[in-house]
Image (cartoon, rainbow, N blue to C red; front, side, top):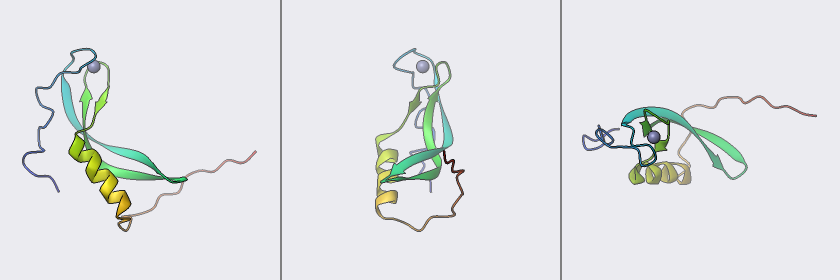
Length: 85
Ligand SMILES: [Zn+2]
């Protein structure tokens, strides 16, 4: 669900560290929830072309937190490898 105002949010913005151009991408973002990790898919982020710094819009972070807190049913689960010594 993308509103029109979100598209191109980062277009024309510059990196605050290296002044590089920021481009918008969607990434899969692992977030820690208690003792577990969940993977949030299709998160729109701004990525600096030069140094790779990621920028998150405040409303995106809120949406992620709200999604986790609401404990929406996960779209699917993936298995993670577990190592034991
Ligand atoms: Zn940069």
